[in-house]
Image (tube, rainbow, N blue to C red):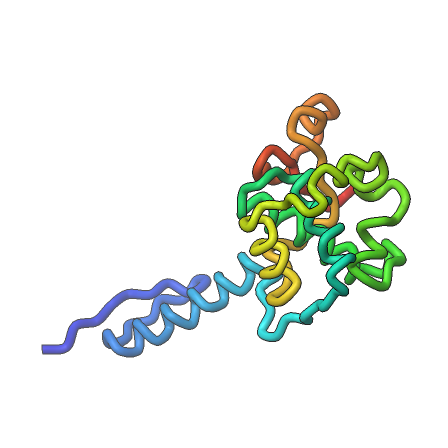
Length: 166
């Protein structure tokens, strides 16, 4: 007994068997996944930092995003995205973090309280982003309260709202 499935592609109706249906469905899901997660890369650039720079980056990430893994992933991803974007005129991860006006945690010196005292969770998140690439494609974030006050919409992760157009 042959079972047929009805698949609607644009305006065409096509009748196919189960095996072909599953192949087409998997292909369609792959396309949807690729479009939904554009920052997923087949081969991510790996960043290596001297320990003293890494320590500063991790301290800034913890000050900006707290000590949750997900929040640290998103802050660190924003740093990598800015480094990879010529608009920000930074050649290294460290240059991005210390650039004037980019990260309040560095500019105001608040990161210093975490130097030598950063959480293992934040270190893991930063290392994962430096090794595997960013988990999103945003270039900016504001604290959620400030973003709300300014009418800024975006994706809220760990108390920060992420967006691209400034």
